[in-house]
Length: 559
Ligand SMILES: Nc1ncnc2c1ncn2[C@@H]1O[C@H](COP(=O)(O)OP(=O)(O)OP(=O)(O)O)[C@@H](O)[C@H]1O
Ligand SMILES: [Mg+2]
Image (cartoon, rainbow, N blue to C red; front, side):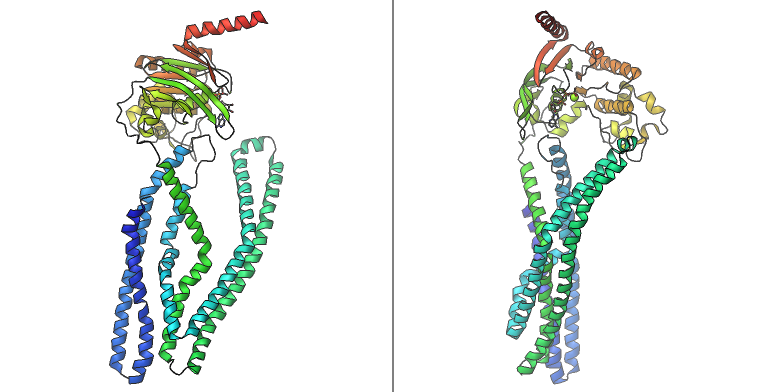
């Protein structure tokens, strides 16, 4: 976060205006003082008019400055959002592809809490808080008893607030975490509704949810019992305190003849001014701490993610060469190695088939090749340049990736094929044609504008796969990585895929297929066999096939 920018443009002006406002806020008490002590004494109407005019002027100026101050805060808020939100979303998405630990999903929420603090009443009270000692000194100079009264009442309210925190904090935290569990359970039940309804799991589901929810209710009522009691006591103390203020003032007047009516009135106003930020600090310190925590997290997240290599290499568009050099990848937390020391290289225009048993690391290899996961050791090179040195938004357009589990976005078919960019009709149609999707889309009621996802048309598994394929093909990427592209295709879909492969080969696209289907293996020039996270064989297809056959024959002989 560019703190200096914010301090210079927003914080300093706001602090300055707060100073002026607080000075002007002394005007009403001076006015009262003059009224009771001077005007009443001299019985001069002119003095009354003059005082009133001066007060009016002061209040007007204060009102205007107040408006300007709140506008500055709104601007600070918007500037913060403009500067940070897109960056945070980008970093959140980038961080979410790592298989390690929890992705940061709360950065935008943290930004939201900092922003709502900036436009809420809290920041104003906080900016006024430095004035508290000055008000206290003035009260003391009027009469020490007035200050003692303020301190006594504040201490009383503060102890109630601390008691409330002490008594409700842990049940509230427990209630919240129990509540999160219950909510997550309902979310997963809704996602799996088909399974639940098909196999009559409703009653079991309700039973499990009810036991989670019971905990929430017990913990919540425990916390609210205490917060109710304390809020009642706080109201009582607050009222008592205010009444005591007047009583103390009157008492001072009775015992101290130099303490005039003007003092009493002016003192009352200053007393109220001092009470504002004090009450806020007492009742709002928890939210203040939460905002500070949100800010600290945000700051750490921004700092952590800006530790990137200065990766603004100006690289020409790739030709399609891709290679892995001694790449190893594992899950740090569990120490499980998913990919062990894999090396291979493809020249532009090669077509490679990756085969191997389930869980041998084929999809992991694909995720590494597209840069979604970063290798812990070794390098992946595209046209000789380390993939890590390519800015992801610039290399992305040269890569087509069809993941094993396809996720489409809410939006039109064209939006999805165009990778959420403003769709270029010609390019969308070209990609759809290669993917064998064009005719299918034309039969849909709204063609390419058909909305899919939430509230839109539901696509079949095979249709989703083809939309995902067209999305990978969009913009004629130089490198194409398809993870089981035939998983939910029918014969027509497979024919379209085989035709697409021929087209890609003619176009010189480097294509990597992960597949179990021998049909597709026939169409590739090279073959890579994965076994248990390691590369078991790599080379021209015929050669690898021969090696594999030899190995099976040997195994049969020795058995
Ligand atoms: N996000 C993840 N976190 C931890 N481990 C993972 C993750 N994704 C995959 N794995 C593990 O990595 C190993 C390889 O998985 P991968 O998906 O690469 O296999 P695959 O060869 O593609 O299998 P399939 O043919 O079934 O798709 C598996 O043991 C799997 O448990
Ligand atoms: Mg897989």
